[in-house]
Length: 208
View 1 (cartoon, rainbow, N blue to C red):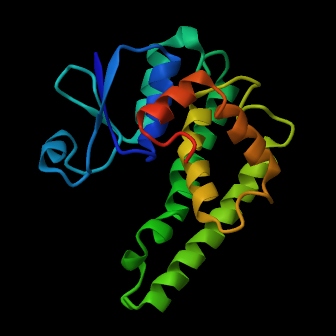
View 2 (cartoon, one colour):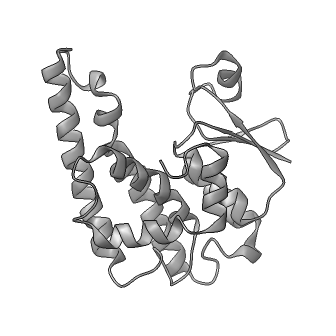
View 3 (cartoon, rainbow, N blue to C red):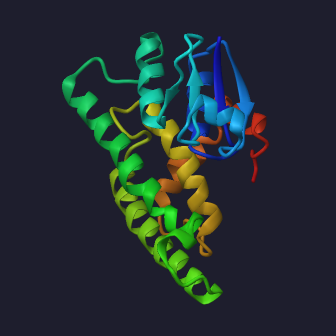
């Protein structure tokens, strides 16, 4: 049995979704990243972490997603059929990890990006972060035009990976996602997926 350590709505949600897609035997444990017990699982204090039952938990979201997709090839969440599709999946996983996710850091942790702790300064940092988020969403929107999924016309672990980040954007952008219709269409289709519904319901965030 796998054990998923997660925080509600965090990137760990994508692993939660994939565990449902592959019908894995798992339990999900809600944690606070600063909890001493969790720090013994992952000293970096970041979710997700996935205990494989071997005493050596996997960490880093994209690594866990790739592992699960490869472990359950029959579900076809990776790209074994061609090096080109595999590279395309890796490209978009890297974009989400290295471009879209970090764009939210000034929004979530504004105090890390300025020595001025006034409300005005922190608000400006958050606003700058949200502008960057919108630039990254524009790239996603362009890519998703005419596509139901990120790569190859079928769902993959990258589609699951996008769910928490698009949800953050929807919640933090005052004007919502209206200017990114392809992102909205892709995200709303995923929100109708039974596994996505279950994972989000289990985390207490479905409909929020």
